[in-house]
Length: 219
Image (tube, rainbow, N blue to C red; front, side, top):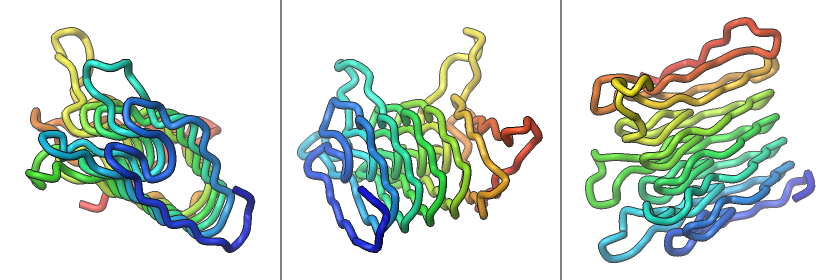
């Protein structure tokens, strides 16, 4: 897509992303330069109704299939509203699919992860990052106005819910996402929730010069 004032509204079908991949596939290369984008991931059916695709990124993936991720997603401008399907990220991974590599360089971006369709207070995908039970990938923000909202124990920016491993194995509960911010970003608002072990997902935030940055928490 080239820069401009056009409008695109996209809704994924079963298990697929609104913009990106179908089920069991990574998101590929997605670039948005401008315009108004409104997208929502699709949902599964039957006993898999709580599996869904990302608003932008990958579709849901079966746990027995090869791992997938949201692909390489770049947003340079425009007004982007992305909502995940059940247990999927707004931008990044579908259910059980990792976030991939996400760069936001400008624009007004609102990304909302969704919870379990049958049990709204259970599980969920990140606003920007991984779907349910998947890591957040790498998120780089160099500009724009970013609002990332998740539900339950998923991160606003970072991993989806239930993404943690045994600390006895030398790893950290909650997973982590590498988040890089430029000083020209107008604001980043990202809620975080504690997982079932009472631990928040870790978000590592740095400016390019190595100094500390902060992400406002909506709680």
